[in-house]
Image (cartoon, helix red, strand yellow):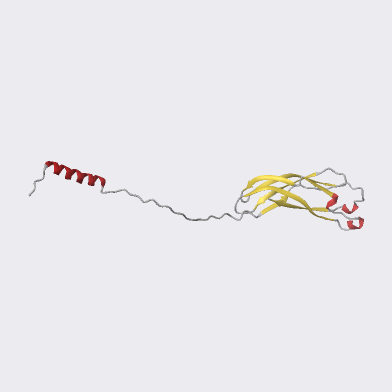
Length: 160
C-alpha cells in the first residue's frame, strides 16, 4: 500500500480547490460567418392636400395694377407632408352672360407673374401653411376688350 505524502495531498487538495473555484468552466469559441436579408417599407406619402385662395382679387380693368395672390395649404392626411411650393395657373376664363357678343376674352387678356410660390415647410397632419407672392393683372391690349367685362378668371393651384 502506498503512503500519501504531504506533498501529494497538497497537490490533490489544490487541484480540487481550483476546480471548485473555477466551477469547472472552460472557454472556447468557434469562428463563423453568416448573412441575411430584411426589408422595410415607407408610407405612400400624404396625397391629401387642399389649397384655398385667401386673397380677394376683384375689379380688374385694362391697365390696372397687379393684385397679389395668396392662400393656405391644408394637410388632410394622417401624417405630415413636406410642401415645397404652390404653383398657380389660369385654368380658364368664363365670360359674363352676354359679353361674348362684344368679343372674346381668354387667358391672354391677363398676366400672371411669379406663379411659383415657395412654402418650404413640413405641414403636420391637420395643419396648414400659407403661401403668397404671385400676382395677376388685366392686360391693356390695343384691341377692344369689352368681351372681358364681368369675366371670371378661374385659377388652378398645384402643390408639390
